[in-house]
Image (cartoon, rainbow, N blue to C red):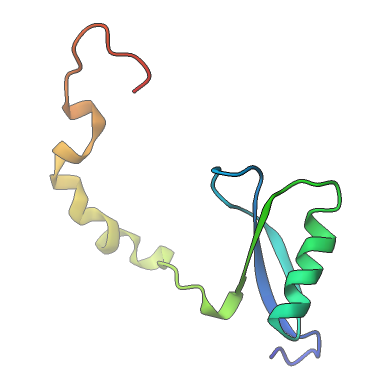
Length: 96
């Protein structure tokens, strides 16, 4: 729990329509998951902006570090077949 007595920091993700991916919309402070869910609903879906909500404690999110980017992401640079420009598409193929 945060030392400023606002509760834990939670990250909020909203699904705009069924079948669509959730998108990060913001953060909020809450003391427990029930309070966080109700607050997320009240803050981020007042105008029916979504059909689904995910909340995640900010302290539970694991991310790569900018300082490690070179060693973390560079190993893929030597695998050109992972890039779509490596492949030639036949004429007539659309929407790829």
